[in-house]
Amino acid sequence: MSLDLVVFDYSEVLSRNQPQPVVRALEEAAGVPPKAFWEAWHRHRPAYNTTASADEYWRLVADDLGAGWDAAHRQRLWSLDIGNCLNPHEPTVRVLRRLHGRVPLALLSDAPRDLARCLDGSPVMALFDRRFFSCDTGVNKPDPLAYETVLLRTGARPERTLFVDDNRNNTRGAERLGLQAHHYTTAEGLGHHLSAVYGL
Image (cartoon, rainbow, N blue to C red; front, side, top):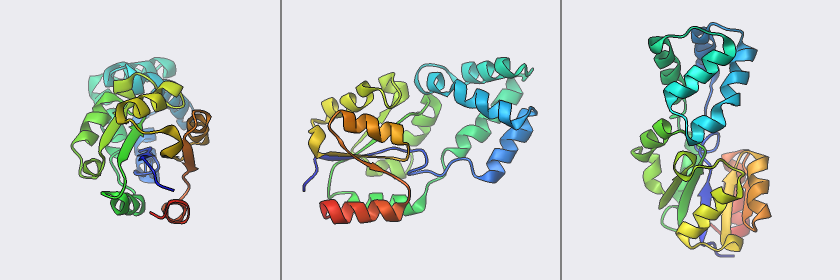
């Protein structure tokens, strides 16, 4: 079966975030109980991915935790956090390279503006025909508008669009709109799926 478009998620598919040394560095820099830190980190992420600035995000996290982080401290946390998100997962990038030039490729990522603009100029992003970030569309997955925006702007038919994401909520959201979806667990599994089902 031919495809109009293959759409990739970024985090934990094309990147490998939060390796243990970085997790520990963030926790140590935060100086608060790790469980509370990560709860606050996740709680305010949807707003950060769409409308909040980095400073607003880290102020919200600090307020939740009762932490008195000054601007320099917030900068340290921000640099660890964003830098960590730039680590490529080379096996999946090899799959992406295999597809490049054979089928149109798009990225659909829940990413804050500062991360998105870093990625815009990155070598891996050059493999994509189109890139869609939540900070630009104003919605996070699995909001239907996230997928509809990709389809509308690329002209891809949902039944001939494959969406790849490690989050089952996101793949189910795509399927509800008629897209095909692959729940990503490994690059090897993705490569086999593309070969067996689509001949790619």
